[in-house]
Length: 360
Ligand code: NAD
Ligand code: IPM
Ligand code: MN
Image (cartoon, rainbow, N blue to C red; front, side, top):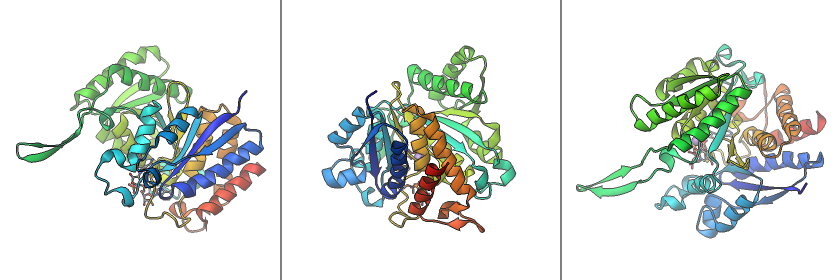
């Protein structure tokens, strides 16, 4: 078999700091026989500074040619003043998702038992938490046309279009039903079907798919209630499926249940199994460059890459086991620290995971 290609896109802010730690773990996988070549390229603000655009042609070409991509994070105050949205760092990320057709975004919110105390919710509310949020990633209001800011009747108006086709809803629905089938067979579709036509159609398509998955129990919930239920009784959920923007918001809320947004990895998959892997959090400008960020979401994203794009479940489990081990040992970056634990930096956390990985 030919060695597979991985592209690393560190991005901005804490991006380079956290991907550096994840790449260490990836290299340790190579030591254990993982046959991959690892390349690197610029995206986001870093690419804008070097080439005047957030997703240079060379980066996109490398991304298309790779089997899997590991991305840190993009964006930051330095680039928020760029007026042309198409040149903003975030557009680099959205462009990658769109050009590669990465419509299926998996965001698992799992509470490591060692972190029950780090969650802002009571331990009994979150202990044993294991939710999978399936977010549609290449459609909805993020990409709908028309969009813009223009002059109407003497004042400017801003507008976007929330649109989904039946085919787009059906394919993300299938990803979610299949996921539920492999888990606890409960799927909750989150919408705003009491107000928005686009989600009336969403609900209808989910219902249409249900008979094909008789082993999965489908339910529906309005997004406002879902936000409330996530903090009231999160363990009622198994798999959640929702559109692009609702999924963005709900996954950040779910992240906090696990102790920190620094714990939440993600996979973004297309129809051919190619994937981009990234933490759910952003570039954290407030702590960038200080060796403070939690690299575990990015390291756990490497585990997802091994599982979903590289067919190496044993290496994935080994990484997850190593993360469990360092948490057992009481090591904590600032975001998940509490009295009695040992504060470590980004690089110390990465080194500890690496040592545990080699050891388990
Ligand atoms: P953010 O996720 O970057 O930060 C929110 C808060 O969480 C901050 O206090 C930050 O310090 C903390 N945090 C985030 N990741 C952490 C980690 N690994 N360890 C410890 N603490 C962590 O969200 P924001 O502040 O709204 O956005 C900052 C920039 O990131 C913006 O430019 C935004 O567009 C961008 N962003 C990018 C991505 C991405 O690349 N996938 C995702 C979200 C936001
Ligand atoms: C995420 C981010 C992105 C999104 C931004 C940076 C475009 O918040 O990956 O969750 O909204 O999808
Ligand atoms: Mn987000």
